[in-house]
Image (tube, rainbow, N blue to C red; front, side):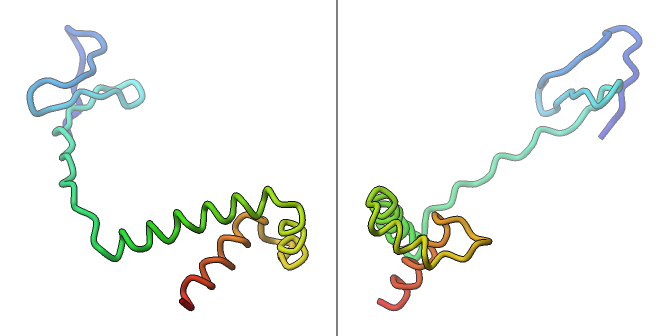
Length: 98
């Protein structure tokens, strides 16, 4: 990281080649361009959990819309936890058992 004294240019910022000019307070800094991450494919385990969570999200939405089920879960919910996270955790526990 290089600090540039702007005697001629005034304020400068942006990308030029493989470097980036940034403002930090009243100084201009020269840095190398950030590396773009390599995209990794999802593992089968990630896909399975993503599908399970998608199902759980749908169930949570339906539970919160139904006043009877909502009241049942609200009665079980501890005071320091939101109803949404409580329902998600309960459904996740059920999913892990199966």
